[in-house]
Length: 243
Image (cartoon, rainbow, N blue to C red):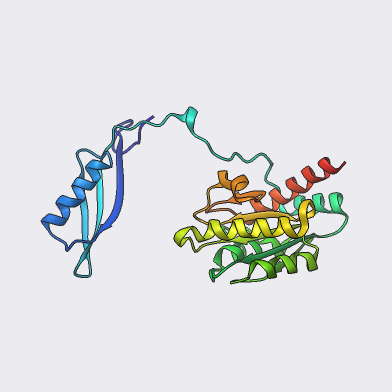
């Protein structure tokens, strides 16, 4: 299939970028050339705005010849049902006969707690209450800039069933490096008895869980209900393995 713009299958796409050039005809010509090399031909500069004296922001519109083969699309399909808070509480009570302990943090130098707070705090995200709202979950939110050794220590002390790590800062792949470091530290400290490891953030690829050494990766737009439902599913799978 092809992108849709004005009519079905016309291949029209829109993209935006900034060039380090002062606004003007030369900058617009450079923007069209770049868009052509990206496969947009003919490319129309529909918006150009100066950013200071030496940069220009562009929006470019035009058709591409590329097609998408849906048979080659690889994504992580949700293999578990979405549960209501009451269903999550009931399942945890039946499975564990105690509260499920969740420890969450932003690790390394990442000071952005918006993601972890959206999942853990009662106020939640996207109209859903966070995991603190769930009666059968005990949530320990360590906040931002938590070192990996401290996270491991607290997870052991709290007897965590799951550790949730949010990473928003992605410069130089910091989110990937931090997550690999965290996974390695838990393997070394706790071996097969480590808690479930879950990473999340806007730049994560959900397909990369195994590569990063964690059990699950959640991308942008994830809601507390999705995470809670996954935790129930993962605990069920663990109990089957140990049965």
